[in-house]
Length: 556
Image 1 (spheres, rainbow, N blue to C red):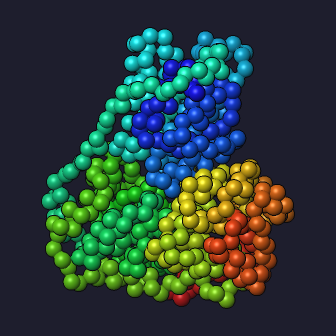
Image 2: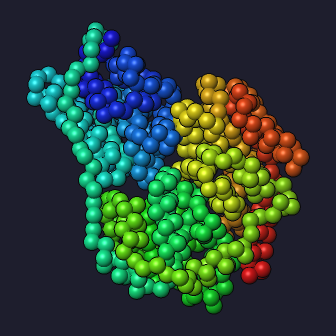
């Protein structure tokens, strides 16, 4: 049986009509009519997450896995504000997150009634669309409510994906669940337009440029796009820079460009400076690449995107191309001549091949445990990387081409990783791998509560007793406040929390223990989620990292 509230019925029925069946629910009384209506229809798969902040990121994890919109439902008041971190991540990672919030009647705002604050448009410019539904009393109200929900659900995936907010005021009485059926509702269909441009001027500019560079930012794995890019690279003298989060790995591309730029001598910079740069996808982690291109601006810079948002990351944008990136590169490749000589590619590639990954004989440290974990990952693995040091350390090691990588690099918050990977694992049928640092892990610890039913997590927790990346930042590493306040130095161990959560715990404090632990961690037949805590030393890890970069600098 369903709630009798007509705006609730319109919301739930339209989500069903749009095929949105994954619903993450945080408990409450004001959203109880929504919860009752979602959970009473077998079409919806409902996930309960008490903490709204974690619920939002849990939903993001499902979106990353399913590549489809997911709704998160919360009660009124501060519950909604706890979803703001996930909304901001979804906005900058361009993920279709739908926030459905229950609200109280607007006349009670500011009247010292409980659990009430101004909820409409609570996320401001961080949502693609925000609608405040009417409480339906007549046919006009029903038409208006239906139209608003359609507007929000279209905006969630139109042009580029992003979060939307549907606010549902629900007045008392709340708990009449006597409606037997969801209503038939109007869905406004929106076929996604195919955008095209005249490719000829771009092909001419490409052909007239001698030093071409393509940057692939964070994006989901798309085999068709990868194949198209490979054909372009085979045909032309160009460099393709990719990070693991770009999910576009190829032996002919340059993935160690951050280390390469560190090792590049000042008097050779001009040789590596591109004339033409194409950028597509989301965020790039490397600060060195941003600095390199901001200091050595190309004459031509194209940003390729489905949307018309101006993204000028490298401060040299000349052309904003609103087009599906795969189609752009395909059309470009079809309209240029094949080149046999590739001097610019050979310059970058020969230097790249001189820069090796950290060796196996380095001391037990953050880099060592990360490298050993990555080397053992099976083909076709789903690998999640926490932000900050983890995603940067992982980039120093080669990754199998079939592995898919996920990381919340939209706003890079440390609070997002653990709940996101749990949400991903809740709907993915295979094993899900994660590398995470101690601060990110303990920040998201609440997300481990009540997940003993999730059996497919394999987590490497690198515990070095604080925020390791802060010890590597020039200037900050000399601050007297660094250890205690900035990097939050601690002696906390995760064992008891992990065991209390019903997950299997392994500890590793040296290379032998790590080897033994990894053999179990990579055992996909083990019927329980596993977290291995690698206890590394902050000072050793810092020195190993610096020695690696010193070595590649001196060797080249």
